[in-house]
Every structure is written in structure tokens, then in C-alpha cells.
Length: 174
Image (cartoon, rainbow, N blue to C red; front, side):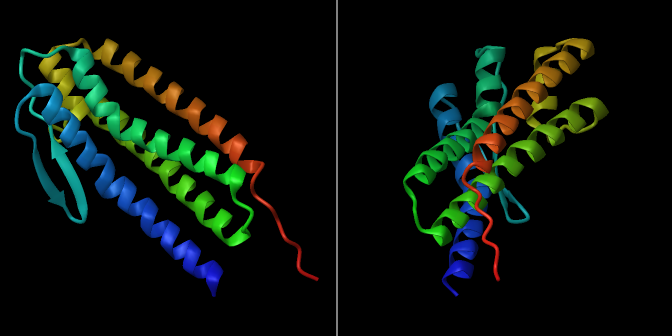
């Protein structure tokens, strides 16, 4: 019974992290950096921070703000990897592994959604599409930027997954 409780709590913690905390922190940091109001809205159950693009800030500032939820997920993955080294309880270890997997999945889904919105050029809702329209970067450069972002994120996910395999134990029942 304890194992299922840890699994349920880790799924809940992972979902709260990726659906609410990442976007909330992105909005707070964007408000502090841009010194302007950031609006929050709910799309279904997902909290979304709408970052206004104004001409006084650089392209790299907005890139940082759009990458901030992914960076936060990476920080949560790294913090849980550090905690895995110290955890002996298998049930708690299973929960932390599930938490890491949810954050890794968030990174992958977020990157592919961003790439798809840039490829289709029809999503004015996407932060990346809005950023590229705002900065008037050529379509070929947009694709190169998104390809590099994909490579970096997949390399990090690969590294994290290989490290995570060391902590997965398979218990054979007789």
C-alpha cells in the first residue's frame, strides 16, 4: 500500500511542478526582468504565463524567459538525482524516479510542441512563434535555432536517462 501512495504522491508532485510551478516562476521572473505585468491564464487545468514582447528587450532575454520552464524542470531533475543517491527506501526511490520521468517528459513534449508550432507557422499562441515574428528572424534561422534546441534537450534527456538507469532496481519475485 505504501508503494502506491509514494507513486501517487510523486505523480501529483510531478504534475504540480510541470503544470503550475514552472509557469508561475516563469511569469514572476518575466515580470521582474521586463518590469511589466505578465498575465496568467488557465487553459484547461494548465497555468499559462503570457509574456508580452516589447521592443526594449533583447532576443536573448526572451529566449531565456521561454527556456525558463525547461531549465526549472532540469533543476528539479538534478535535485531529485542528488536525492536519489541518499535514498535507501525502495518505495521512496520509486517515487523520485517517477517524478524525474514526469519532468523529462515535460521537457520532451514542450520542445516538440515548440518545434511543431514553428514548423507550421500558424500558432500565434506559442511563445516561440510569437518571439520569431516579433524579432523578424528568417525562417531558416528559426529552424536552425529549434534544431539546436532539440539537440541540446535530447542530449540532456539522454544523459539523465543513463544516470537514472543506475538507480532502477528490478526485484524478482520467487
